[in-house]
Image (cartoon, rainbow, N blue to C red):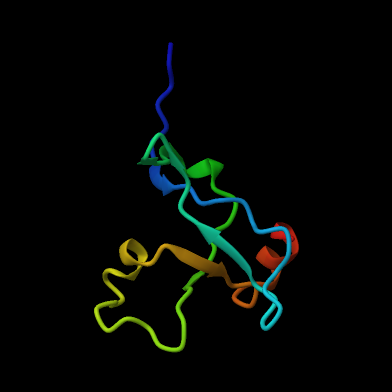
Length: 94
């Protein structure tokens, strides 16, 4: 008999952390993971989630004007993982 979890989560996978953090702020860069041109996604049990992370969009001197809080996760291709949002997550991840 197969047991189906009661609560599920849709997960979009990102690249592993870069080997070194960015020099100016110490954050690691990530980007979406793809396989054969398709973004890697999964549906998993909520019980398997350990921590969430806060992603900060990577942009140059200014953010593109068409980015909004509703679309930035789809439009931006690279992000920094914020180590400042949760000290427990920071200790777990690094």
